[in-house]
Length: 399
Image (tube, rainbow, N blue to C red; front, side, top):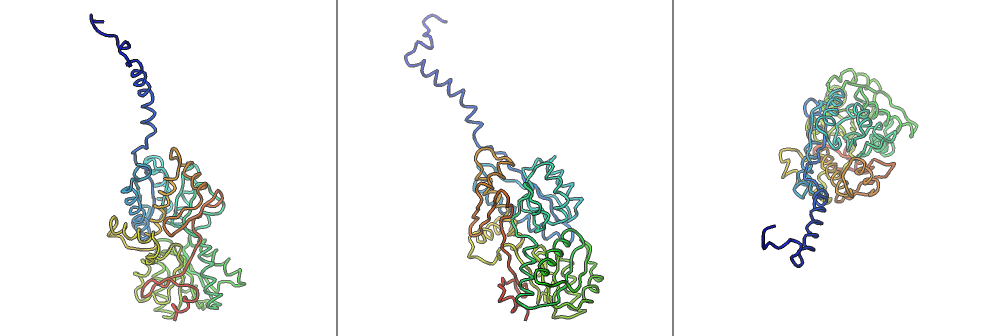
């Protein structure tokens, strides 16, 4: 010590000051660690971005991106932005499985969101169960995503069985139609819809008069056209993607009867089907699992339209992109409700514990044994414009 220097601890009050500084230095690392990380939350999506079913994937992706951009502008999830990585699977199961492994192992995604299709979802279920990674809001109403119950599968939409019950209720109970046929895709999606329709008809003591099938990602429908009309149906229920369904409907109206009635389930892609059919869209009805995007009385729909205009202005306003937006909002709502560290298990547990999520006029409910947020279905006519129908109005759509 130099001559005349005053020892540090001999300065009045300095001892207590040093103690406080040391205490702060000891606590500081923990304070910094406890702050929300600014690293992005990476989500993965495998869907059709090319090929015959591409509109479904592009629209689902657009809705998700609009939701995440809006959420990020508001601070993300506890300061963390959401980033979406979308990979093209062309609506083919093998590609979906490869994409899923890449998203999990290489991209290190937090969860998978917005998968499009039943056969693609079926291909990745063993993977998500092996890795215990949430499979969130797939664009599919397949029963295999609901039964048996799977902890890591979280559905937003109603099931195809519920959609088929709505269609059967209208066709049989309301319209008194007795001769019904089914046109379906020759894979797990088509089989699921077919089975749902047969069960709904069986509850009414009825059977299909005929059925016909086609191969995924093709327009080869002539064989099914012959098979179905051998049964002389009054109405045909279709379980397919929009290109094949549009082809079948147009051929039916030009070669068989221009006044035939057709009923599709939601996966078809309502706006894409309407555009593909043009004037052939008369007497065509689609069941829906989310509200009509034209319904501006719902706050979430008003927000969705503003976000799409701001962040995804080139993408169309459709039922599919609305479903994507809803899925993105729900993810953020659950994520923000997590107390403590955001992990896959805390995300699922928080969804169970919170139970009810109001996204702005659209309410989803979950529980420890219930991973389907919505149960509502409704009908829409698609020509000349998309109009929501109730059972009484639905008859007028076919006049």
